[in-house]
Length: 121
Image (cartoon, rainbow, N blue to C red; front, side, top):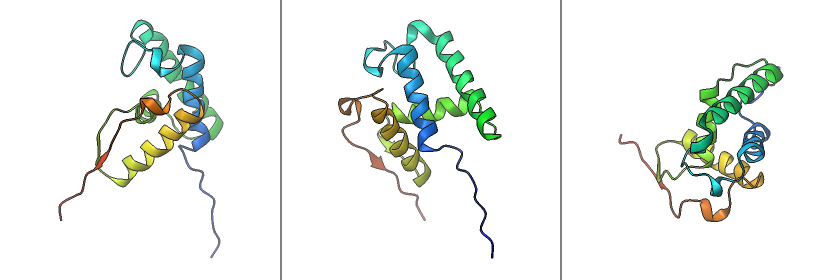
């Protein structure tokens, strides 16, 4: 049976590019006045999300939206304490690793603990 190669939409490299761009545009997360975006530069932040979505869409032929970029970004800066499923755990791990690698966040920015929620049978 032939195998087909299916490109992963959110690769580690794409995630890292998001944090590198945010660092270039707005500096490290530690200097931001807002929790999820730099309060004094919200329109610029929204513009960067759109630019990244457009670039990723053109590069891959897949559809990326600014909201999708924002959702991935949020996993890298999370203060969330509970994750509900495996996909959230995977997104958190890969985005935090990319954010750390890009030097957008530091180890001190990470939550001190996380709880994995379990679904009731």
